[in-house]
Length: 120
Image 1 (cartoon, rainbow, N blue to C red):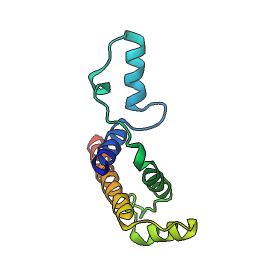
Image 2 (image 1 turned 180 degrees about the horizontal axis):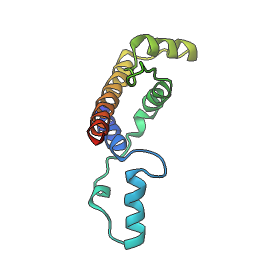
Image 3 (image 1 turned 30 degrees about the horizontal axis):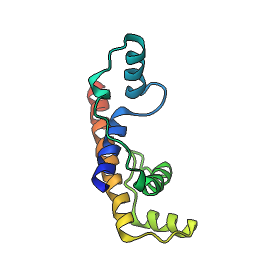
Image 4 (image 1 turned 45 degrees about the vertical axis):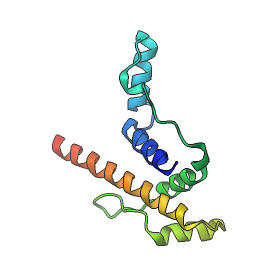
């Protein structure tokens, strides 16, 4: 289920968010044409048993720091501070999953920055 969560995160980052996201564009094509784009086939379902870890990650991700050149990885100190503040006592494996999700995010962010730099 951790692997499914990681794969789900990669999928969601690829699709993007907001009204102009790739997912919204593909769904609009499907609605307008009745032809389902292949990208919408075989979507990875969210592993419901991991919802709380995903929510922890999303909250930490919203408060991510930056250094003037881009975003920083979420540090163990930030994770600890978040859990202390919320009075949550995570299992070490949950912290590890958050770190894995952060690695997926940082890899995606780096690829997006590279694409944007090539456009300039």
